Length: 232
Length: 353
Image: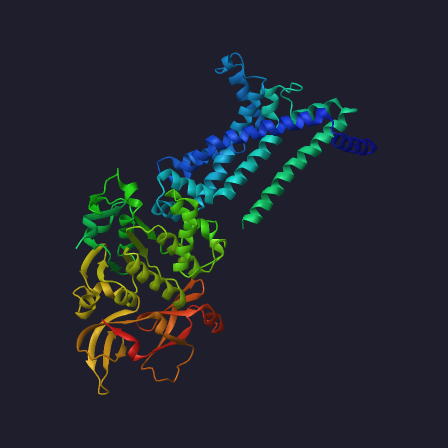
């Protein structure tokens, strides 16, 4: 019990002492996951709009496909991407394996179904007259779609937050395609895993990183909640 | 007379169901035209086609002298705007709502401010710019929607049941604004309504609609003055009944509308007649009220429709009557579905068509 308490105290000391190693890992994590959700939003939101606003055969199947992918195990996706990015894989020539780009791309792929599914539901929930309203006020098709997206902003923000949380908290993809290379591809989760396994004095480092991870996840949710309250 | 829009054989079908059937209609520049017909007669679809947000399945539209095609529909849309029956607002301030169309037209900020202010003043919502549109009352929201359309100063303004769900105060403001917009801004206005009373007072011309067709077009006096050969289409309009009129000894007229219901009216008529009672002119009570009103019927509430500050009730008294009361009266009277009620209205408040 004392060891755990000691670990927590040391962890707090590390956090407040501004340890460069810790802040390197934290900033890398935020950068990887932040860039991943931007990428996922860039391709996920237009897909969500197509799914929510247009009618075509097979739409329900596509929606169901993305819904089921929301819970894909990260190690499974990590392994698939490892095989694709490895030298013998179809994208081996890009030399992406064990680079930050591989982690970012992997996390973006991981969270894309979350962005698509939540954003689709949010866009579908917008008053169907908004599209016609924007048009009758002079909007083009794309301007009217943008007006609908603006109305669904709360849900789209929720989609991005959920995606960020999933990306920053996942281990499988970052570990398998990033390789946990110190100072290059190591992030919060891969580092927590490594330092916990090492034990001893490194356990405090793992606890510090876990505390920071939890603060980030809860903090972002709190900010979203406050923004949604203010919008209402 | 110059036409604002001309429709030739315009047909619209949704999934094989014909909603508009070969509509031929000319809308004159500067007029107020009412599309009068029951729910489901195609009024809204016709307005959406005139707003260029729905495409006709067949037929041709000439707008401001130009045939509308896929290539110019977006440009035409800039000159024709529609206010929907169910108020649709963006989740933002009143200013951003009213200024939306102006911003799309790249109006400079200074002009934008003054145009928004002018439009809000027209609908008597001065100083509402910073308020959140969706936090306003139903009547105020509908006035914001009207201001948003008026701010664009389009050639044609299309209004779908603009006062259907409003209390008398808000309805009066909207009717006044419609008249002002037509008189002073010279805007051509097309109103879809199933309110016989509104159709009688506001427009220059009326087009009667029934089952996706225009059955008759004419001035209100012409339409209401003679017995329409399409009287059946009237019957589906709220509180409009057809029957046989007979003179009474007291000098009034008794119109037998069937199912044992006889409505007394002050106008002298004989034979086939259509009558209309404004939902606001009917008094609702839980027991029979002793009054000078000649028409008292007992019935049961069969439908309750919540409309913001108002409640619309359908009472089956042999024939279905729509009654509009305030929400406060509704809760004070503790009314519910199937409750037994009495409806009372004066013979002089019955409009004879």
